[in-house]
Length: 79
Image 1: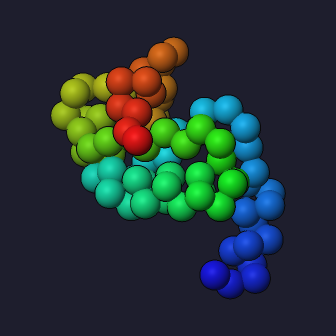
Image 2: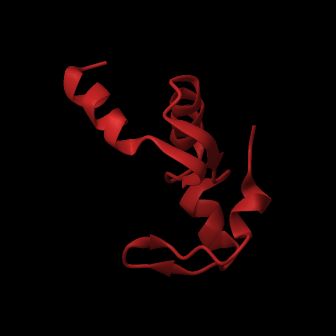
């Protein structure tokens, strides 16, 4: 890891659930596992199937990303 990446991780440190997503869910799964292993996130949630699956299910997307309705992230939690 670069020094910049490690510095940025300190700013990212969070407790509680954080949803990670990418196009297909593969990279976000790797990121979730890595960030949990490094202790940056204590409850990372991967959006399995990513944005592709989200859109297939007809769920809303805004200009800034996914529009997460209350509790929706629990359906895609992967461990």
